[in-house]
Amino acid sequence: MLVFDFRVIGNKLLAIRKKAGLTQSEVAEAANLSDRTYADIERGTVNMRIETVLKICEALHITPDTVLTEDNPTLSARQAELIAELEKCTVKQKETALELLAVYLHSLK
Image (cartoon, rainbow, N blue to C red; front, side):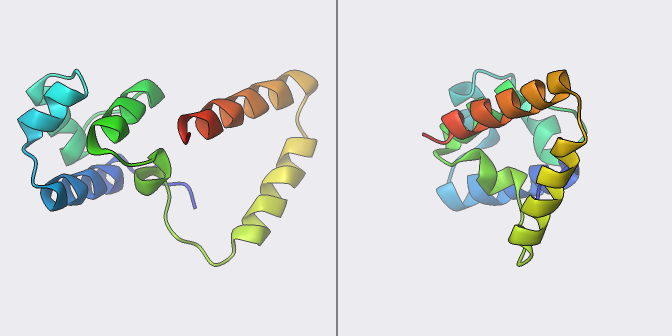
């Protein structure tokens, strides 16, 4: 399941960073962010662009799904639900959704 709560994402990043034995400054530098910005991200007080998430994940050597998803046993049901929602969209909306998915999947490589 996709995580939309920036505090949850920040807590995950904090745990991953500490497990890796890194400081906030080290991650911020590796992700080309200011120390304050990265600290705010861990606190969940800022909205992040997808590019920022990707930079942080690269700095921590993790995939985006590590911080943007939670395990969910009903994955097949959710997938079917999303496909049904996609079918209701306009052609332009479908193109946009598929492009976003393509960018995300490419980032996993």
